[in-house]
Length: 494
Image: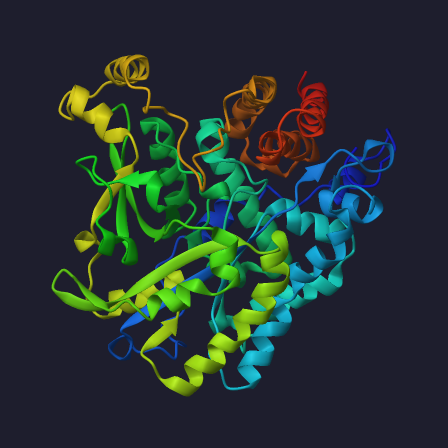
């Protein structure tokens, strides 16, 4: 069942009306997103020569889709929280809903007061669909105000993400692009094509960066094919090309993330570095602003530029985001307006565009790669790369180096998204394989196949099974949800 328990003999149109708008415009949206027009440069009130340091804050919002509605219908976990207020912290459901909406109040208030606020927003497709399913137009309308009203567009940057909050390292490679495209199409269906054209930065779920050479290569390739210019990465998820940690100052300017696959091909994308720390507390208390006050300018390719402190946090989780962010976010912008301190809030894309305009070349950015890759390339060299050599090197390193793994790195090293979750990962990979076995030949023969309801429904279950929450909360109810989603998806593909 999809949203509100459709009858078994529903027609295609009835089914399609219940499905989220995930597919069918792949070529059209790729053409739309792949452009080099400046987004913020024509309207920005920032001048690079007047800034000695800057900060970029992002809020990550997500609620998974779960098979827990009436008669097992797919609903948002937020809806489940409202319907079961006595369970756990479900009593916070309305506070969470307010957190999803409140930037639509904060930004207009600040702008009307003559301030120049900034915020980057990352909402999963699950969450946006769930708000639509729940009829929470109050929240969606507040987000549309920020997204579609030219008065507020300069102050808000949307970041793309995976539609169902899938962590990239353990997502089947053929599904990486499907997740990315699905988010783009759903976002455009809510906020319009012009809004999608302005989405050039990408926020990886759980800040999880693949470090397997082939997965990372395909991830970056998919991002670039979908029109993304940059992605945010956690500082300890990357290393310099010689295997050392990033130099401290390099964390505050753009880096060039380089990926080499097992065929020896290379690809790169700009990365903004999220520094380590207690994510929610840092953003809730606007620590990036306070850190920026202690930083200054530095040089890229001989050109002086301001540093940028980049940070992201869950926008609703925990008391600090519920309470302290609401208390501490707004005063910062009044302080900046009144003090003229040389510190500025900035968007990721805005920062890169200002650097471009100053003559900074991405070729001069410091380079980095996914953590652990130096050990692979050091073992086999980069002149004679082959899939066999890469796989042999990985196996030998895993057998001899207890610190080496190919699980990728995320916002925490205390949590594995792979170990102990075979009962989710194996069905996830199996469902993906069934989907591609059935539909890849059909799509290749007729690209309009992606517009059909049967394709869209099957893909929905593939994407949903890959949701990270089914592995974050441990064995039990959440892994049971994953198994049920797999069962339904498998029934559609057999």
